[in-house]
Length: 299
Image (cartoon, rainbow, N blue to C red; front, top):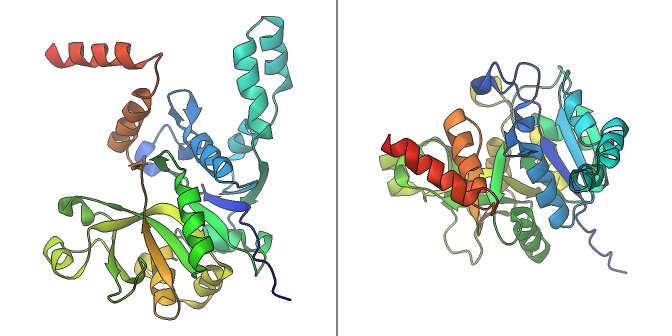
């Protein structure tokens, strides 16, 4: 009897960084809790996961980040205040937060190496060897009609590769900031041959594509096994990119273009740009905000 593939129901969100480019704001709170208007960044990620069919959210954090646990928990005192004062619209918003998904919090141990691959090792005991899962960087947002993770899940379920990573086309002058994809020739799917981190522009134009990797993935357990096998990479860190290159030589890794808009919040300028993009979607803010910006520009 052929065993039916397991449905993808888990997501790991990496939220254990220090957010140094946002100090002092991130001194006592994780960068992922900075607001995009009236919801923290990580709330948008959870919404994307839930809309993609994910039920279990594993947040990999570090010491001192219990603020995220509190956010996704109930707040009876606040609920009572809102109820007593007739603020029912706000009451509904905060009551729904703990019901969005099943939340599990894992602290990244100090014994694990630094790097964006370490959160996967921190959460590995919560993943079965026969199941695939989503992985998200905690500071990347994607605006799209179909959730970015759902797009990747669809590709994974169709081809059953070792990994699927979301990519987006960037101007060549921006490619040098990211991991650029070199596709394998002669394949009918978007199968990668290699990812080059922060390539030289001229070299990238000759050998690579201007598709760059960002923080959306669907992984099989093979990715965790690869991270346990490979040596530490640049800067003595454990890199997801190195695991992708390792697997690309032994298995199928797909770099799937995402239909939508990738918005990184990794530095103050791009965080402000992301805030503006989301403000443009708000009927209660858009016109007044545009008017304000025009007045400021003309001053």
